[in-house]
Length: 302
Image (cartoon, rainbow, N blue to C red; front, side, top):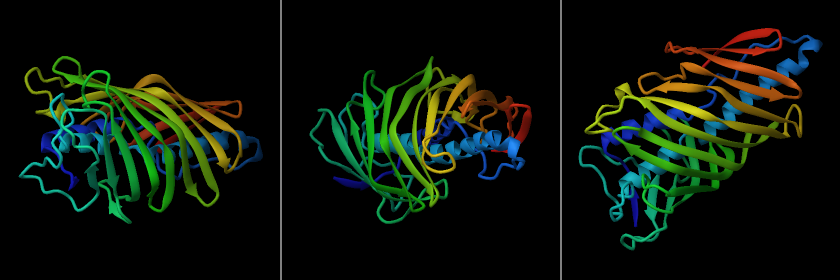
């Protein structure tokens, strides 16, 4: 059964906040670097940070999309899935469509095909096309459930995006809030004509503030999340073909629902025997972070 999905407004706001919390990097494409020959290795490390940011952004809304589908199809608790469930005061968008392949009552797994057509505008201002194939092993927030997402001819702004994305350990309660783990394997992104990267990561997101003892989703405005994990990026085509950069959380990244940016935490990047650290600040909500590589420290805009 095909439907154009929408979600309960409060749930949608909450899922949106959690999805944004999965971002590792969100810096703009331009970061001023030195051009002197003896700075080449440092500059390439900074370039790898930019490419990781761009690759990561390609997958940022996959959790949000899958969770929204699960909610709209009635698959977020242990109750029976109900295809096409919508909320009267929230009009369904014209795209993407979500088709539940096996609406056979309370039996699992369940498969959903999310079709973006030839051009579907996201809330982030990107145009998506192609298909995401999603398998729910059980309800979204049931202990032990996993969600597997695999694309088919999927593109963002005309750029090919591939990989296997798994959501696991998703849960919520009045005392621990929302928690989940995401893992991307075999990721591959065409960033432009001259850069193609292979990409993988594993992240754990935990709500650390804003718990509501009676209705966890009622007031997301005070929610705060922490993000921990690691990522790797290798160049299939690019400035250092075959080289791999790794990214590791040094201090948990902190993302508040009411702030657009990560406001605290540190990440370490290692590339070609060069190590750098990205510092997101001390908790103030702003779009500034600092990357330090060797004896160089540069401010970047998020």
